[in-house]
Length: 127
Image 1 (cartoon, rainbow, N blue to C red):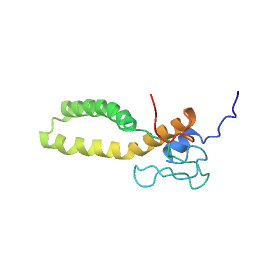
Image 2 (image 1 turned 45 degrees about the horizontal axis):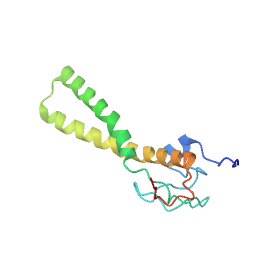
Image 3 (image 1 turned 60 degrees about the vertical axis):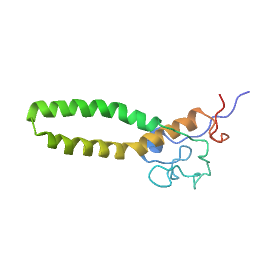
Image 4 (image 1 turned 90 degrees about the vertical axis):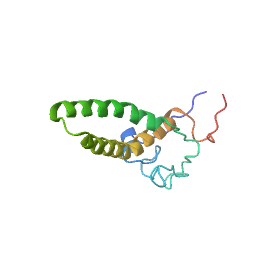
């Protein structure tokens, strides 16, 4: 039994624009990180989409490495007082997470739409 392939928006459109993974026009989020109940343009229900802690993990892992290396190089090159590090790096981390969390979460929702049957899933998985 073959099924017709589902239509989907380009991954970059859905991810960077935080748009519906099917049509690429409807808003994905209803607030900063809360997934909307569904697309107002094509009617796709987002009820089966569950990203869990994935977006935070995929951001924090490389961000920890980038921040550690950057702080070390900054210390070796400029040797600033400790309070400078205590001001710069928390602000850097907060800004990096703040700007990247929505697109990463939108990417994971779009990938779930492409590779999992989220339209008929109610969000509960039975193992």
